[in-house]
Length: 307
Image (cartoon, rainbow, N blue to C red; front, side, top):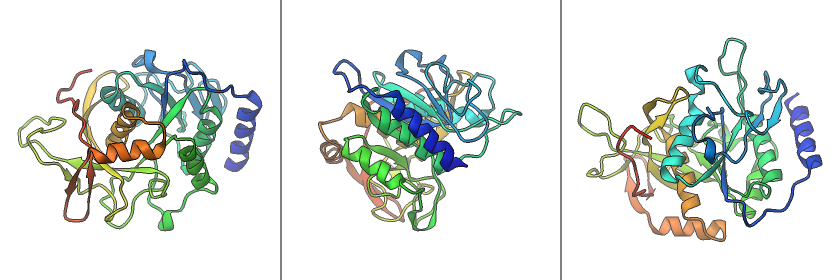
């Protein structure tokens, strides 16, 4: 059933027609997640998308594009906070970024998240590929996934990510928080993604802070992966926006991935390889007991719990 829905959606995308990218369209980051509260960062949203395979979008259908498509009210279950958390991290790293929230998670009648899978991510990537020029999509931030044996992903997903990479659009994906020291989440395990892990340097005080500038970063023990499976490590400790507007201290590879997405756009060059190389050149090597890798320092890491 999901394959049929995805095929219908892809056909709808193609039939709609996509104009060539215009020089006056600012680059945007597609955030594939569970939605957001558009009352925040409204001026930064280029468009909204809802593409789900269970329950319905705000228009009562399984696909919606335009104002309100990815919007969630402040009273929505806290399970839905993840999407706005990612957007808040991106905006703190790169306040000028334009965002396209792509909601892939349905809501049950009692207000909880419905089940979703990498097939839903694949449908979102279909939309990104077709609309890349229309919205000048420069990066995809993806903090969804799961560890599968042999880096299993839906059929054609590897091709989607390779297509975007060839178009100079990185799929920046979280390696996951399972503490697995032999594997990372799919699709971050795919060669053509930019796989992002987490660092942790806990402040010894009573109140948590996002980053202790005096500490030497080390790779978080919960950050999945063996040696060489993660492309970049970033700070994972952030105060993030919630659907009700409050700020909450959160940690995880998702935060690091969102930060990398904003940072990639700030440092974007003409090609994927040039951008990757430029960012890599500015890293330092860090480690833990299980792996080592390049750490990206973001000078503007916020220490407070506002904005």
